[in-house]
Structures are given as structure tokens and as C-alpha cells.
Image (cartoon, rainbow, N blue to C red; front, side, top):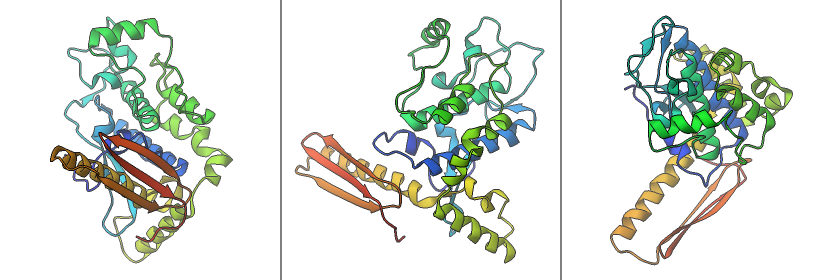
Amino acid sequence: MEYSNLKTLDIIAKQPHIHLPTYTLRALMKQILEGMKAFHSTGLIHRDIKCDNILLHSPPGSGRVHAKISDFGFAKKEDRSIGLTYLAGTLPYMASELFQDKIIVTQKVDLYATGVTFYRLLTHKYPINCASYEEQKIKIARMKSIERHPEIKDNLLWDLISKLLEFDPNKRITSDQALQHPYFTSPEAIADISKEQQDLASLAAVAQLEGDSSITEFDKEPSFIRDIVIVNLFIRIQNNKQKCEQALNLGIIDLFIGIMIEYPRFKVLKQLSYQRDIIEIGIKSSSIQQ
């Protein structure tokens, strides 16, 4: 597996009490779709796209975060002329066509799994989550489409995700089509680009001029950039939760941990109960000094 220093997308998907800023979510989705586009250009199908197989990595000192597709153990060449000899993938991420009697696997299964990944980042749930293959097959057969979750309030965002979660693979959009969706190209999307993204893009451009050969065109495009601060926030809170659980297991009581982390345009206040203890996580808007 390729090296990453910031864990995987699971660090975000498994923390429902924190919501990604819209510009961070948009940049993350663009990175993943661009990665899928590049991978599919080789003619391969990944067959196991999921949160745990999207690595997060920050080049040291850059302040930027890259999403990397990993774990190619199930990857195969696309061949529409033959049926599937064995199933691969993780059940909640498996496309509807994988539950048909005659299964022809195309790259569209990866796009469905990408849609599930985005859905989970937003809702912290799976659109369909049954205990077995047979149960999921029955449920999909009874459904016409994936229902919109109340957490997904942005109409353009839901339109994009619903097109990725389309049950008919012939109607499901490709990664290239997804990248051209108004969710990424509309005036609202352009206006949502943060100052932090613009600053990091400028720094990348300067670094390239100074001879940094690792800089890509995406590093200089603000809409693709994710700030390391927000990912570190998820990791820090996850680590503190684990420490609290360990402390409780050791019998420590009256435990109180307050985390106050400042971040521009980003507010979260959530109380979590751990037996008799309360962890308060407060995040207030203002600039952060790393």
C-alpha cells in the first residue's frame, strides 16, 4: 500500500459530530474524481473503492493534503464480453448491477462506489447497508433509486451524488462527466474557494518556480486544494476520543476534556457522553496559528 501520513477517509466518515466546510468537501471530491479519471484511463476497474482505501497524505511542509486511491488487489481489466466469475468489493459500496443474475462488470461500479463514499462523508451512513449479499439484493430489487438523506441540503450536491448512485450503469455518469458538473463549475462553487486555498496554491506556484519538481497543476489550482489544518482536526479529536476511552477502561472517572480549536468559517459544538463523563468539543471561528 502506498505511504500516507494522515490515515484514510475513514477518519472523517466515522466522526458524525464534525462537518466538513463546503470548500474542503468540494476539493476532496474533485481530487478523488480526478484520481478515478486517471485510473480508468488505463482501462482498469478498481472494484473496491471505499473510504478506507482513500489515503490522505500531506507532503511535508506543504500545508496541502492529497487524496490517494489505494489497494489495487481486486483491480482487473475491463472486458464487457465476459460475465463475472467471482464477486469483489465491500458490500455497502457494491453497485446495483452486481446483484443481477447476469453480471457484467464495467468501470461504472467504481463510480457507484465513489458515490457511496461521498454519501458517507456527508451523512456518516451508507445509502444501503444490509447484513448479507442476499438481503442487499432483495432490498435493491425493491428500490427504484437511492433516497436523499436530510443531511444533504445542497441541491447541486445531491444531483451529482444521485447521478453517481444511479442504479442503471448505462445512465450513471463517468468521472469526467462528474468533474464537469455544476457543483464544481457554478459561480457558487467558484465563490466558495477559500483564502486558505488561494494562498496554498500561490505558495505551490512559487515552490515550482524555485525548482520543486513535485508540484503538479492540481497543487496550483485552488479548487483542488485541501488545507492540512482541517484533516489534523479530525485526527486530533479522534486521538482524544481514543484516549478518553482508554482512561475509562482504566477506571478513571470525572474525566473532562475540552478542546478549543479555532478555524475560519468553521463552527462545531457537540457534546458526547462517555458513561459518566462528558467530552466537549468546541470549535470557534477565527484564524488559526499552526
